[in-house]
Image 1: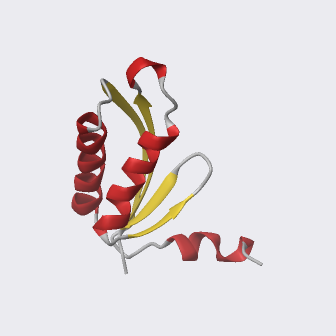
Image 2: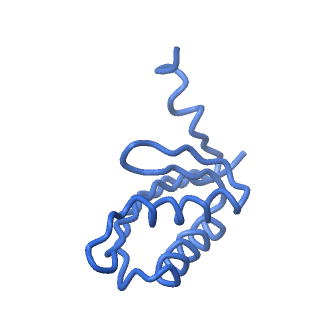
Length: 97
């Protein structure tokens, strides 16, 4: 079982005031390629894994957005770490139909 949940909201500064959604999509592609379990929600994406791996993914997301032409990126990150294990399903199962 994973020991860490990390939720991230990327806020790319876009070139020439362009729509940010295509850039957010690029950040999500980084997560998809990583192979970690994740869930995309309306305002943030939650990843499940080990802290060093998840922080590396955050770094790769920023790098991808900068390479895509963003002059800057701000991210809001929340981390829950439990050495005994934690999962998205465990935290949300009572709310699922």
